[in-house]
Length: 395
Image 1: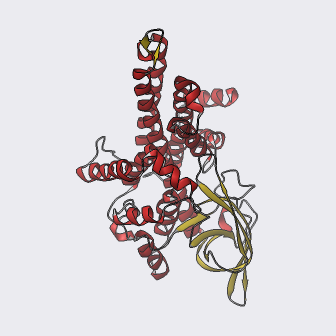
Image 2: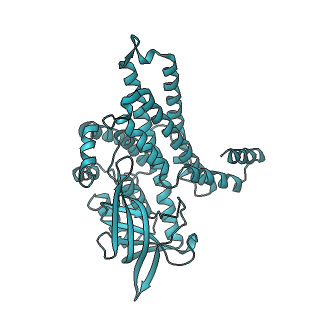
Image 3: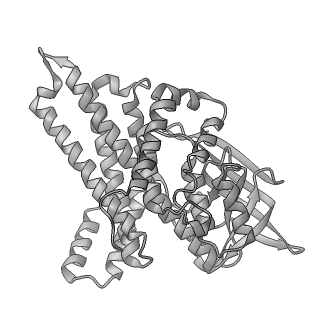
């Protein structure tokens, strides 16, 4: 897949729409008010996102979107990372909508996508389970057909947007053992359905998630077998890349806010930006940020490859960008000194967001193992495989 190394005019306009919204309606103090609200999101903002076309920006027109792709989502989420967005756009516009778009066309799919793109309903994908540890195939939640109707029983953990979602797309096992990829189905569950309970809580970055318990909960089957697996894989791959873009945005914001702070904070009769040791640390932060941008472009290209090379590219991006984000945002806190640890300053919140991104959809260790496995399974040179094995020994 050939990647453009510069944005089109439409993508630049999309990035500008995020920047304008952030400046006008999502300054850090305005965000703090949203965080403290009962739901932890702004319904007014949600309606604005829909009007700006953000929910359908990453979907092709044939899929019910506005003719975009993962690149448009990356543009959006890089901006979201800078503004520390807490609304569950990742859950709704990427996880849920990409899962639906990955299903075979049909009335059930299309009837869900249209109101979701319009912001009339909030969707999420409930797939992760307590024992899954990032595995796409691990599903213990059980689906049973009773008198021709499906019922789900089990648990889903850390469901993004699970506190406010109106409808959940839930993975459940229709056959086979917990790690068997062939026995998974995707089901539609109303958030108010009998037998469904939610335990809401905050993550360290103040975003809201929920653990979902299902006890003989009525559900509608959307897909099973290969169709369900393909939809889950598509949603997860797109969500990993979007979260990597968000981490890049957080890195950039932390980097330039730190630069501005060093240019104004004085010590020993000079501003801190004149100290060579701090200049070197800022240079390291810039290098890690630019390397992450290159890895994001590589991940976007890898989305077009459904084979081991694509899996390897996405896993490599997740590992590299997550580590760089923790380094850059951690350095930003240190260079701010004690004030960087306070809740009143945005810089510490970028580190918290980087922590969450690093743990989403499988942590860094999980994706490093995926990278090693796909590298050994591919037709690579003996020298490269030996290097991979050396890296595994170090880890």
